[in-house]
Picture 1 (cartoon, rainbow, N blue to C red):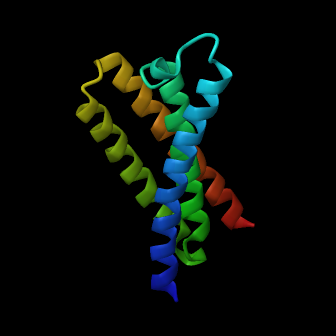
Picture 2: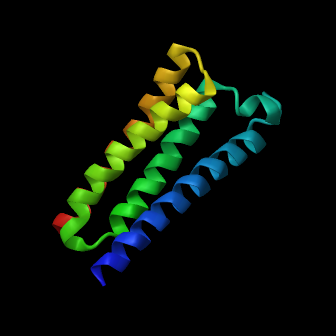
Picture 3: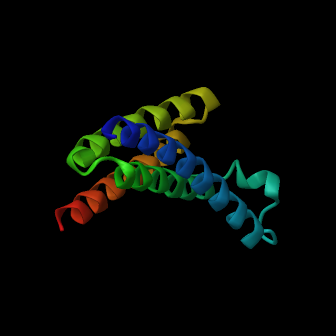
Length: 125
């Protein structure tokens, strides 16, 4: 049963990451339609940073919440590590300029850290 919960935690984390990221980008694009065009939403450092924060937070909190209670700390550290590597790789692959890449990576890592802290708090009682 523990192995199944670890597998489900990974699936829940990945699914929540993409749903949170894309949903945030979509909502921001609709809300700011008068300010920016939908095509520019994916190029805006601020909007993309908000979406990366929301997606990473959602993915991390889902993975930590589904993980077995005894392994939540481990899952939190694993999610934090994977989120950092994924954010850096994504920025490198997209060839974003260094200031934009740093802002977006920082937003993603901050989302994972806050989810890890919240998960720790929830598992304590």
